[in-house]
Length: 349
Image (tube, helix red, strand yellow):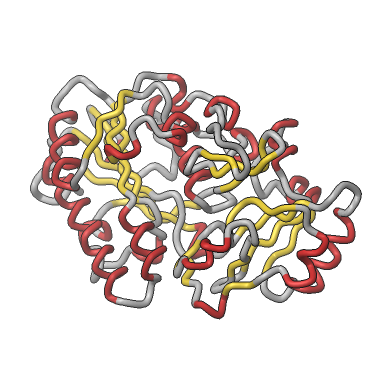
């Protein structure tokens, strides 16, 4: 985000961005780099660029906030889908606590300004306008809602011919279909083709002096039904859980962190990277050294699942209905596209 807004051209920035009058950043939620290929996604595959790494945890709430603020999760504090906050567990995407009726204050969840504090236009789903998570990672932006992909394309066509020099757009379809159907049937393949058509339609709608940049927040890991793990006896040492199914924070009762870490390593060390609180920070997995607010949100133990495995939080059993999940450190989740092209009916090279 800082590079795009400041007009910088670091080595990883795709060449079509240089010299563009305006830039449209299209975030395709859930599109991992391994999903980009000439057969399923020919318009995407024809763009310039390659893979970049997302943040850990590789999950929507953390990664979208990092995209818009340009900050690591350790800094902005959105360290998962559900975070320990105010003595409760806050579902960041739904903007609700586990045990309280009032919604969390978006500024308490995340206080850093998105888009470097600059006025930016955002094109997103109409249903997300004014939501708590929108206020967390997009606050103060001018929000333009869409109800169909055709409307998304038309909004971008019109905005690209105006005075705005940067437009942020978001499409959730790949992630939603992957969660509902997994990665190994026709639904996911059909959605990849649909997302690729969307990219092509946007490119065709933009003028030639506007660059389209396509990226994503994370990729996916298919989790079969027998890949879901309960905590078993380890659960007796856990006060509560937070985070994501594939990046599960386990919070111990006071003084119980060491025992929980030892038990978790014994039980799950073959199926997950098992991190203690301090190891996670010392090795910088979430980014630079966090402040006190982020430290209070961390669990004593993190289970970062290997491929095809996910950990059930007893407080959120419906999460086990997901057929695809994300959040962990595998290449399929961590590598996302950073691709660009110029507008125009030629497909934008």
